[in-house]
Image (tube, rainbow, N blue to C red; front, side, top):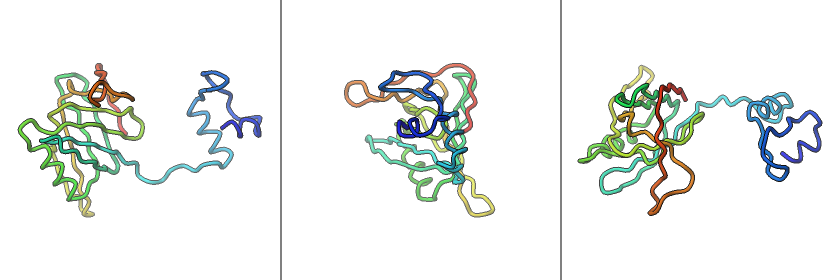
Length: 172
């Protein structure tokens, strides 16, 4: 960005940070890049990346295309994540969640949200085959288990968790 800032007088000014490590307003940068044909509007369907931990600490990474995340308004409710999956991934998710204590969501990374983690009780609640043959799956977990996955970790490589509270509805 430093190069564009030097070459283009209309490049957005830093919105914070320091001279050495400036911070920029993301929407302003995206608007500038689009206006100057430096990037295009993405047309591909976004994807979510899931790291699911099952019985015996078996860890598997999954991809959900066209993800939709609905966070419950109250801690007593359930959060739900749905998206398009392969049959093999849906079968594997079901197997991981079938353990005595259920699966945990080690990390969920999806466009437009901070990474989430859920410690236990993640389960596959729906498999829906569309008329076009695609498989849509929905995962759910108690809202009071939700937290954000912080960069860095506590001892033993366990993610640092900060609980989220309050009404939220975040489509991704």
